[in-house]
Image (cartoon, rainbow, N blue to C red):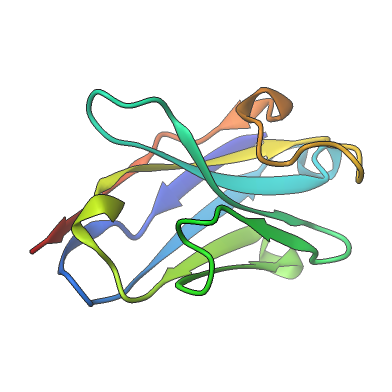
Length: 125
């Protein structure tokens, strides 16, 4: 599975961005997609995840109510709509794919087998 993330950029605090992640290759081998982010000097952290078939979602507490993850199965694409952005949201955002059991922890990076190259999101104050 190959993943291509795009849509990052520079935005002022309070603004919005939409990230996209296109999947190609053996996409049927993955059951869930996730977004993670990493800022300098910090560990990669979970942002949101969605299951391809059911559309069930999970979010980190820090982004819930501000970010929305969605998917377009026909396009093999996952989106992350981000609103009310804060300077602390500044990071490189990565999309990831994995064949994850429904009852497993979708917030763990270890569950994901494929990763995109990342897209930079910078929120200025």
